[in-house]
Length: 276
Image 1 (tube, rainbow, N blue to C red):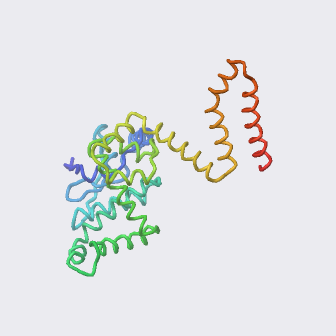
Image 2 (image 1 turned 90 degrees about the vertical axis):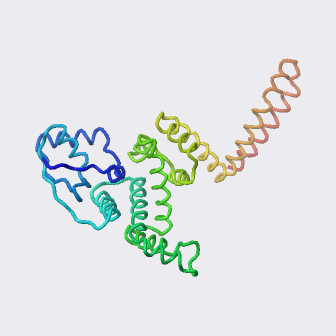
Image 3 (image 1 turned 135 degrees about the horizontal axis):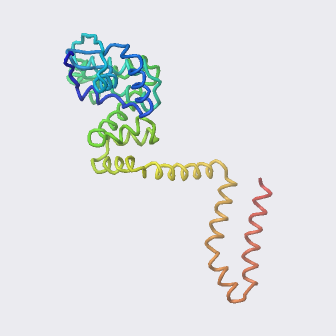
């Protein structure tokens, strides 16, 4: 059997299959054999990691084909395009692969970057990478800014996956929903912050905290959109603050002040009711 090299950098780019999908692939290979050849570059496996693993485990024969590329960056771009074309990817996965494509493309066209760095008319050396972003935005039919944000998202996931691959996998698989903007922000985050987020994702607390934040944001959005709801919320909050005082009035047998306070809140509610 041909010796095949597993390159961890290439393998690391790809999201792992969920358990159900992996078992389905395993069943298919056991029933029908490996129908599609594994793809190699200079003896390195670049497509078919899961098929290769299952075939080795169950002693299933397979064939290989060799492809030619001039650089590792070209291989990375091919892997990304292959994934996008063959899979029904989620929004997070698409952003991740577009970000990886952008980074690989910049490395591949390093001469453009060097020209920009020596060009005094360019600002902050962004001209070359800007051209790359525009070209990829046309290729993927998204905006240039989307490509630039995708780069940050990909960087964040790569950082997260370096020490916490399980957290990265949970995000890419959709098991733990993470807001894209918050994920992009991790590309600038400290290692301590990344560790905290990764641990919350792995133990499941991030999802509960994120849900709580989302509910709070939804409530705030509702209050801003509907002034009447905001006013009602204010009345309820103020009434809750006065509860302790009202209780004391009841204990001291002073119903006059109690009635006065209740009447004021009833008036406020009736006034609000008339506006709705």
